[in-house]
Length: 137
Ligand SMILES: [Zn+2]
Image (tube, rainbow, N blue to C red; front, side):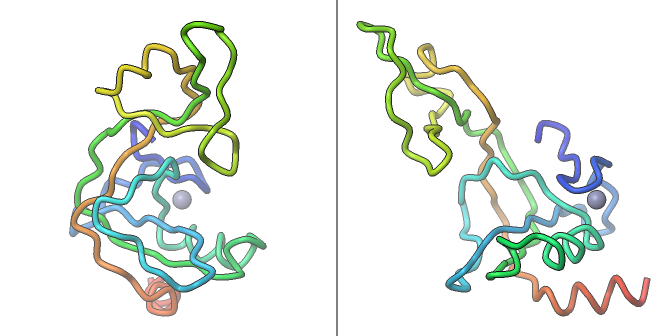
């Protein structure tokens, strides 16, 4: 995530003429990626997004894509420990992790698993248009 490497092929996603990065997300209800949305999911290349939507069972249920201008670091997703008992606290997310902002005092009691960034300057992209672009390239 720190280097905005593609989550499919692992290569850099820098180099688009528009200097944006493509983010792909599950969207079973068809909801777009929102301005300021937090994510732990790295960006993808156009061709890798098409491959992911074709081959990933979760994304086949519904996916949305957005070209994003700016992705500042927000915090981490990790396991938060109770400072008194030193026991792990239940996570907020499906994967058992909790999003903790860098300025949150709980960050000192968090074992980070992933970086969280926020997505800004989001423009929703039609996945079918992406398909046509990749086919033409
Ligand atoms: Zn890729």
